[in-house]
Length: 336
Ligand SMILES: Cc1cc2nc3c(=O)[nH]c(=O)nc-3n(C[C@H](O)[C@H](O)[C@H](O)COP(=O)(O)OP(=O)(O)OC[C@H]3O[C@@H](n4cnc5c(N)ncnc54)[C@H](O)[C@@H]3O)c2cc1C
Image 1 (cartoon, protein in one colour):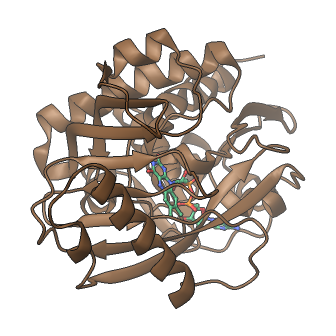
Image 2: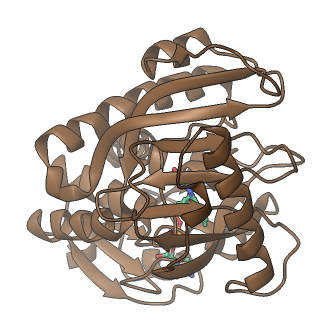
C-alpha cells in the first residue's frame, strides 16, 4: 500500500481546513494537510472573529450547524482558555425590522432591551468571541499534537493529490475553490478591520445592522478591540486604504456614542494594526454562505469531499461543517 493511501489529504490551512484536519485526527484518521501558506491563511488570519451565523445554508442545515458549532466553541472556551475562544456579551443595534428566529434567540440567551428611536430593536446576546491571533496557532498546535503532517504546496489540481496515492481529499481551499473545483458560485468579499488597544475600557462588544450600507462593530478581546468593517465585492485592490478605515472608525465611534460610552471619541486614537482579506463566499445575489459540503466520486475508491464557501461565518460554523465533512470521509472509506 502506498504510504499516502491511508492518509486523508486536506487542502487549506485556514480555519476550515485546520478544523477539519483536527476533527479527522481526533477520530483516528491520519491526515496530511497541503497548503499554499502555512502561517497566514488569507481570510482566517484576518477575521476578528465573532460567532455570527448567517442563514445562507438551507434552514434545517443552518439550525443544525449553528447549534452544534455553538456548543463546540463554548466547550473549547471552557476546556482551553488558552485557545483564544471566550464567551461574552454582544449588544446589537437594529435600525431595520428584523426577522427573529426563536431557536437562535434561545441559543444565544437573547435579551431585548427597551426600544428607543431610531432603533427597531436593541438586543443583548451571549456568544463565542474568537481571537484569531491566538486561535489559529492553537488549532495548529492541536493538529501537530494529534500527529498531522503539514506540507507547503500550491495545489494546481486536486487530481495531483489523488495521483500521489491519496484516496480521499477534502477541499477546504476557500477562495481557491473557484479554480480547484471550477466552481462559478465562489465569490470573494474584501474586508478591512483595525486592531486597537482597549484604552477606553469597553466592557462588551457592539454591532449594528448597517444603517448606511456597512455594518459597524467593535469586538472586545482580552488584550485589544477589533473595529470594523467593510464588505466589498467589486474591489480589485488588496490591502487596506485610509479612506475606508477612517469611515470605519467614524461609524464605530457613532455606535459607541449611541450606546452611551463616555469615551467614544477616543476609540482608535492609537492603531495596533490594519488588516484586510477576502472572505471566501459562495452563492448568488445576497446569499454569501451557500456552503458546499458534498462528496464528488472521482473514480474507483477515490473521493473528493468539497468543504468551502463559508463566507462571513467560517470561524462560527467550522466545527459543525468539519464534523460532517469527516463523516463524509468515513462513509467514502467504506466499500461501495
Ligand atoms: C474582515 C473579516 C471579518 C470577518 N469576521 C468574521 C466573524 O466575525 N466571524 C466569522 O465566523 N467569520 C468571519 N470572517 C470570515 C472568516 O474569516 C472566513 O469565513 C473563514 O476564515 C474562512 O476560512 P477558510 O479556511 O475557508 O478560508 P481561508 O482562511 O482563506 O483559507 C483557505 C486556505 O486554502 C489555501 N489554498 C487555497 N488555494 C490553494 C491551493 N491551490 N493550493 C494550496 N492551498 C490553497 C490557502 O492558502 C488557505 O490556507 C471574516 C472575514 C474577514 C475578512
